[in-house]
Length: 344
Image (cartoon, rainbow, N blue to C red):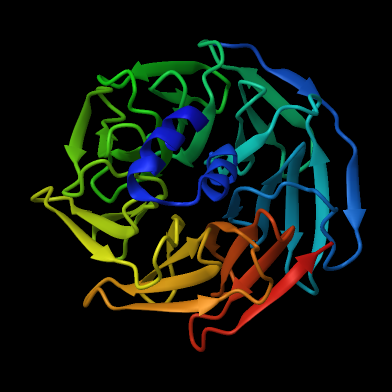
């Protein structure tokens, strides 16, 4: 993964050190393990936690992944954090999503497993990926009741049932390197391809995969989300652009980011009808209008914080992880004020 990024970055003059860190952070039987659940003081994240993914859950909480487990942020009556540890300290949890069963599902990039945290008991169950060293990365709940995920190293898309049964589907290009994945309004799963400058979709009923090339060549597609306008939006960290693809015509439109070499990363739809994204290298949070394409950027208070993933929270704010800042921040969509609530 790192080698591919370095080769590309020589052509586009983006900081190798910044991107290397940026990339490092993307039919089986269950193995249930009861983990230690540690309730932490308000606004506390352990030092060197390695914060990566973040999502919300139907219960009104936020969940995130860190270097050896997952965490839950309770917002009411006050901010409170609980941690849930995976058995393997080198598992490197990455993507995270709420499942249709009410549990929280996540990927183990180095552990080569899919994990879930019981929202009722805190017990973590893990499921081994059939393909060795798959590099599981992004994860999302599908419209078919399964949880879908990407395999970066093997260029496959996988799905796992809530009972733990796994199926894999191979992307045509062996170097596609699928990264993040989201459910579209058309009933398909859409994913980014870091290695092929394409956006892909897979039918949950047939497993058929279709790919669409981005107008910008030699680019890298990373974050992806369904927009409020019925399109799929995605980030291009190397092209320094935000893209969207129509679900009817499949035409891709791209928008340039004002900040040079910003390394656009995560993206999500906000409660205000805009798309919100992180700038890993630019150290900013940005918004883009789904109607006009106008972009506004907001500086993160902590210098070199490396904002990574972002999600719309149950309180209407946008919540994001900081890889280097070791914090979880939030930004108000109404006034752009950033608060870094949870930190070491």
